[in-house]
Length: 375
Image (cartoon, rainbow, N blue to C red; front, side, top):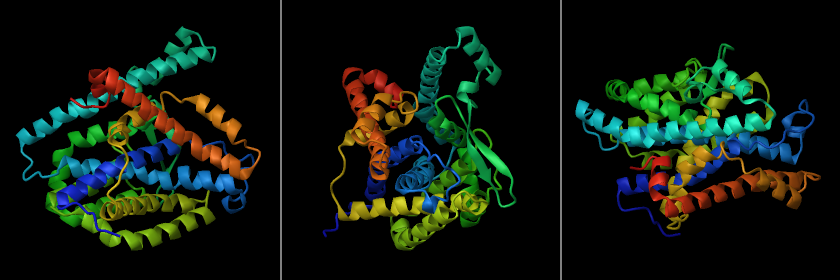
């Protein structure tokens, strides 16, 4: 097959980032479209049936490397082609991220809060009860800690820490990205001075779980953002790096997935989960690099352009009618059709979100630009 890699390192890295945006967002949608769990939760995953296996592998394991990959890309782009991190450059970076991160973050959380309020009313609560329920969380909770996510992360000593999220739940990524961007001079100094040793230390903290998940500064964010920053700050080509490690990473990833399935639900599986996310990022970036070298085709630009819109809107507007329609086509009476229902519905929803983005961009370009953080 012809080698179609772009002519320069910069072109290759830029193409990899662009091509990954939509697939990664689709995986994020699958994280939040976990399907309906099997009735008997005491059955080991290996014996739980085809549907349970598919949804757990995709939404519960594979898709969870998407957010770390986004943090990696964000760290890489923050310091890309930066020769020295001056105060003037820092001001410019912060001004840019005020529009690209903070403004969309505030707007989408306010939209999500309004939708949450309406849903609470629809559930039978009075308006004053909803307001009271919200105020118990705190007046600014919609922007900081509105939800506690999942069952918590277990460190090597058995301690548990929890991720938290704003009212538009997926935007915990944006919240933490804003915080680490503000702290970017510290990241630059630590990586510049400590080089590989500093990154190795952060890797150990992430893999061990000893870096407790603080609101606005999760271990996932700090490590993977710093990992991406390391390539830019030390002037290394991440396309070449992940090409070199693609095959061993892929074999290790398959092995880890097998162990996670075998030991699913155990403390051992929980402790291996951070390693699975890290190796998954190696596989994603390695596969994207392989695709850039061997294929010249990609999805229409609107899919990459609309990725942030999908990311922000998919937990606000659920498009429940899609689940109902797909449920009629693929009934849950059989394992295979149940799995198809789980796989097809999020894909259709994501394409519909992209269609909405396309129409908004065409009819209200200024509003759309603000919503996705483009000036």
